Length: 450
Image (cartoon, rainbow, N blue to C red):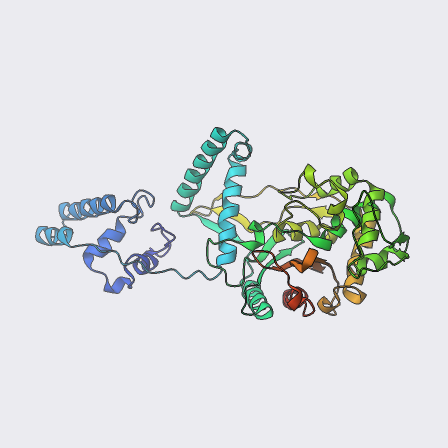
C-alpha cells in the first residue's frame, strides 16, 4: 500500500491522498478512499486527471462487488456512489528543476535509442520525423504512467550548492549562468544548473543554449590535435606575432605581438595568434576530425575555417557539450555523460539502461601534456582565480568578442566542471569581467565536490 503506483508520480496511498485531495488518508471520506483504490489496477487508464469518469465508474463497480460479498450494506453503497468526488490537487515541490527537466529530455533520448527510433527522429523527411516523434511521445507517456523509477546520478548536496554559487556570484541583474558537473571516472552527470532562478521546463541554458566558446575551444581544436599529430614538447616555440590571412587579421586579446613563445606560455596566457598557427600546422580537416569525435550537435562543415581556432563558430556549443568534451583530458577517452543510470519497473526489473562505449581520442602522452598546460593556466595564466591546492586542478578560460560570453571549463581529480556566464540576448559583460564570476563559481563548486 505504501509503494503501489497511483498515477501522476504518486507512490503509496498516503502520497496519492496528499496529491489528489491535499489531505492525509485519515481525513478522507470512504467514497474518496474507494476512488483512490480504483486507480492502481491500471494507473494509465484510471488516471483521474485524464479519465475521471472511468475512475469513478470503477469505484462504483468495486463498491458494488463489496455489497455482493457482504462487506458493505446496500444503503451505504447507494450513499457512497452518490457522494461527490472533488479533486483538490496539491502543488508538488520541484527541488531540483534544472536537473529534472534535463532527465526528462534524456529519458526521451534513451527510449528513442533503445527502441530504434533515433534514426527516424533525425530524418530530413518531415513525415517520417513527425511519425517517430508521435510514437516516441506515446512510449514515454505510457512508460511514465506505468509507475517506473528513474534512477539518476544526481548529487543533491552538490546541486544545491551549485545553485547557491551561481546565484551569489552573479547577483540580481539580467546576467545569466549555467553550470555542469561530470564525474569523469563514471561519466555520470551529477549536477546541472540551467539558470540563475530556473523554473521547471523553461529554457535550460546548460543544454539548450548554444554559444560561441571563445578560447575554451583551443584545447580541443588547436593544442591537443597538434600534440597528438606531432608529439611536440610543450616548451616548443611558436610565433605569437601578428597574423593576417586573406584579410582575416585576429589580434591577441591585449593587442600586443609577442614574438616567439613556448606552447606552455601561449596556452596559459590564451594568446590567439599562436593557437591559429598550431591549428594551421595540424590542418583544418585533421583538427576537426578530432573535434568531430565529440557530440557537438551544431558544429558543421560550415565551421571548418581558420576563425574557429579561436572560437568563431556559426552556432557554437552548449555548456553540457563543451564540459563533456573536456572529460577526455582525464584519461584520453570520451563517453557521453548521462544523468540516468537505469529505469526500472515496480518489481525492480531494468527496463532501460544506456549502452555507451568509451572511445579513445588522445594518447597518454597528449593527455599528460594537456594536463600540464591546463594546470599551468590556473597557476600562472588566465585562470589564476580558479586555483586551489588539491591533487589536481587545471582548466581553460574562454571569452568571446566584445566579452559577450565568459567560460571556464576545468578538471580536478574526480570531476570535470564547466561554467558559462552571459546574457540571453548577448551583450557586453565588461562590467563584471575583472571580478571573474565564472572562475569563482567554478572554484566554489570544485572545492565542494572534492
